[in-house]
Image (cartoon, rainbow, N blue to C red; front, side):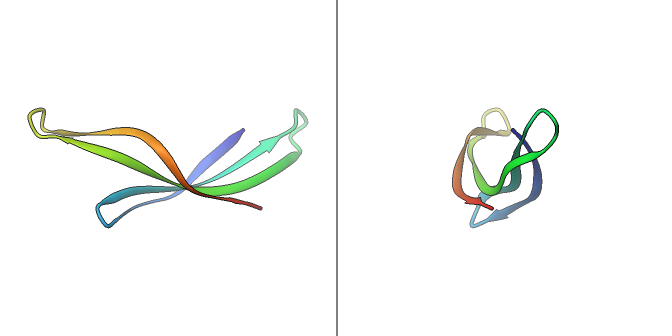
Length: 64
């Protein structure tokens, strides 16, 4: 599986990433492709002066 980040943005205080993903055979032929939007859940840690990102959650996935 391969992929690339196509967009990142903040909406309503949430951090979002849009990406394209695909699977290729050994000869480089694309088998399937799709796109998805991921939100990164953040946890404010004021005592450390930073924000930590938790595991991403896929909120939409589109095949095509």
